[in-house]
Length: 204
Length: 89
Image (cartoon, rainbow over all chains, first blue to last red; front, side, top):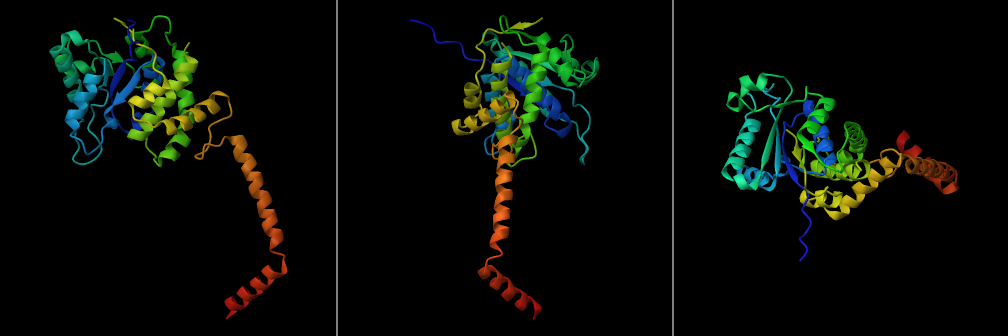
């Protein structure tokens, strides 16, 4: 009996949802789709469901997870606090990987500044973070260092093409969603589906 | 060390299904991606490309001309006189 084809791998994106991160958010989606992955994020979680359970479900459903720990500053709103969600979700991914060694979950850590992770999260000493410098070009470079797809390896130029086309497609998508933010479940789904279409046509 | 990917390359349909994008909306989204890939530019909120928007703009202009002409009809004039009289009171 012929075995069913292997499904596309999913990548859990653990990234900050703020305006300053919009370009990198789009770049993450473009790059992830360029490698033929399906991006997943906590944006998908409906507010009514128990958030922590859904985050765990999402991590379990994904073969890979990418954790961007570049936002370690205090936010602007009072009371000023650092964001703990991203290191927390990284911890959940590490625990998931360690508790189920045969299941082969792999996690990656991104930072924008070299050597900062050793100070902000010294428990990860010995783990090399991928330093994207807070730029789209840097992120594409680092994604190419993380993954290799034999036979259909995307180039950084192809990732840029997907990214630029995705930016072009944003106005009608946002208008149709009645939203001015990228960080909603609907926009995330729409943008990811379009990025997958661009990737299928651009990456050969 | 690089991770070698052995999974299938995700299709837009698979991505949409995973992320809960309905088929009808995916169809609209693929129309947008097609128009961008063909170089027609990004469509507007209604899904029309720039070319079609221009066309509909022209149609609108024609309509305005026609509606301007219609104002000259006697019935409209009567209506306008009536309104003027009311406003001047």
